[in-house]
Length: 221
Ligand code: TZP
Ligand code: MG
Image 1 (cartoon, rainbow, N blue to C red):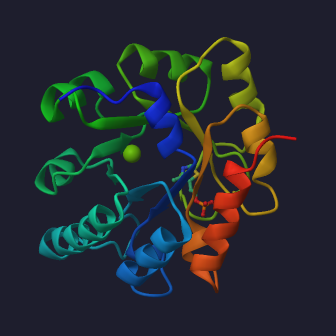
Image 2: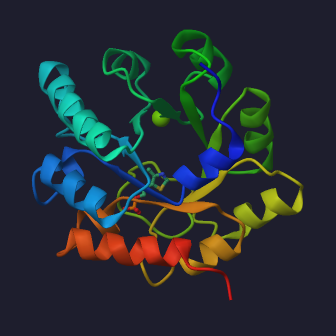
């Protein structure tokens, strides 16, 4: 099978929902099902933090969430953990700057798997592209409480810098994105947005997700 092309990747990135059990008020399965009903386009299983599941419980939850994604036709991405991604036969993996480079991950997982890399500046972005990343996650755009070791908030400046320097790789903005502050992220040149708490923590997950989906698919004025 072939590597995903940029246009398909851009479409998948429009509304990229990320979560693990620590982010959910409802059960993770109910949270993901509601978000899938609302129109997310991609999902990342990110089981992190002091109370994160491990071992058999991690595998079991991952398998359950992967099945929900399969039923909705939403690709299932695993955060960081190459072995978990392989064990769950995930559609892809998202890695940070401290993880294995995309080139080595692709050797292990194969051409057809989606590989995303977090990038915080032009140098990291260029390196990730050289290593064969399919997309970049760029942030934190706004202040976030969902990532303990988040780097400095940069607004939309880094996204603009990457686009002004001719980088056309599919990319999402991440960090503190809400219904109110999402539009400038797209205007800065992102193909979509990545969201944890504004969806996982919403009172009405399905309705909130629908509104996000409308925002990111609305024709530009
Ligand atoms: N990487 C940069 S910010 C962030 C990650 C995983 C957390 C985003 O979560 P939220 O709740 O949407 O701010
Ligand atoms: Mg990481």
